[in-house]
Amino acid sequence: MSSAVQTIAVELGARSYPITIGSGLLDDGAPLRDAIVGRHVLIVTNEVVAPLYLQRLRSALARGDNKLHISILILADGEAHKTLDSAARVFAALAEAKANRDATIVALGGGVIGDLAGFAAACWMRGIAFVQVPTTLLAMVDSSVGGKTAVDLPQGKNLVGAFHQPRAVIIDTGTLATLPARELRAGFAEVIKYGALGDAAFFAWLEQHASALLAREAQAVTTAIAHCCEQKAGIVARDETERGERALLNLGHTFGHALETASGYGSLLHGEAIAIGMVCAARLSANLGRAPAVDTQRLSALLERFGLPTTPPAGLDADDVIGLMQLDKKNLSGRLRLILWRGIGQAEMAADVDIDAIRAVLTGSGAEG
Ligand SMILES: NC(=O)c1ccc[n+]([C@@H]2O[C@H](COP(=O)([O-])OP(=O)(O)OC[C@H]3O[C@@H](n4cnc5c(N)ncnc54)[C@H](O)[C@@H]3O)[C@@H](O)[C@H]2O)c1
Image (cartoon, rainbow, N blue to C red):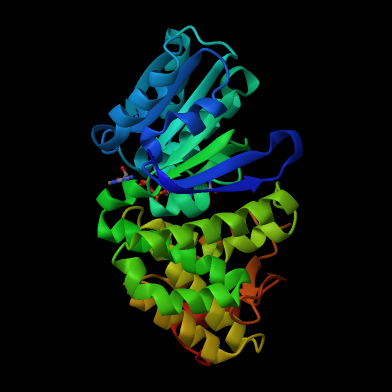
């Protein structure tokens, strides 16, 4: 049984859902069973997470309802498998189980599994229920909440996707115990992002609690996750399909995605690329006179405390990176739109940012922030 469980609501009218956070929730079938629609459940996970957590989840689910037909799909690990081929394997597993619309997909894993399983749920018979059971810090604070689902194409990341909200998000903070340290640190980049984009008090709290968070102290980690989920739930409720405020969650992402691609997938983790991207955005804001340079230094210092990189990898061609930034989904009619800031806690959308100013930040030349 879990203790000190917190619940946060994502308010979306008829599609509202709870985020439940606590240690040991994998063994508590109740929140999961409450979210199941129909007789069929397909648990989608991967070969790293399955040996760690699948049995516990499956037993908890089966314990309360022996009529439930539970199937399992274990995919290979990694971003390279967030593909249409993997989605087709999910569809095949549903067909094999003779599932129709009376089925629920449960995503057990990090953001890769959550995005892929959510996408498959959005497509199967034009949309069935799904539940997110995130097991990485990044997935707990970001990708599992808000209904963005996608797969990658060889031409780029997340190019095929849908908005499809889960029926529930169940966060067992105990699963972080097995997360590799580098993955944990990358998740903290997204945590820091919430302070940077919209909550200066939370940013200061992170500065004070960095040691406890890095030591995975349960209370500090749970507080941070709950805070991020609350912030994201609020933003998603106000702007579900990213017509305005939700875009601010992409602070650092236009730089970050381009750096991730330019340096070759796999060399930078997503969170590491976002850490560098946020510092680039902050520096650019300072160089353009929009924000105090001292805030860039505070942001870099906090990211470095969490062991995260803050400067673009050596040897990248700035114009290649800019070319990739120009492919970003946020751009409108060929004009580069970026999330910049006025300082800690105050992100904003900037249209038509000067390319020379972006180049100066990528090459480390020009005024320093
Ligand atoms: N939908 C969204 O809103 C959104 C937001 C941000 C990122 N994303 C997507 O999320 C993905 C990145 O997610 P991620 O960082 O969780 O990567 P991931 O899913 O690849 O997980 C990272 C690694 O940790 C392993 N792992 C997962 N849980 C574990 C655990 N508890 N113990 C040990 N190992 C564990 C995984 O198998 C993997 O090897 C990207 O595809 C990105 O596009 C989506």
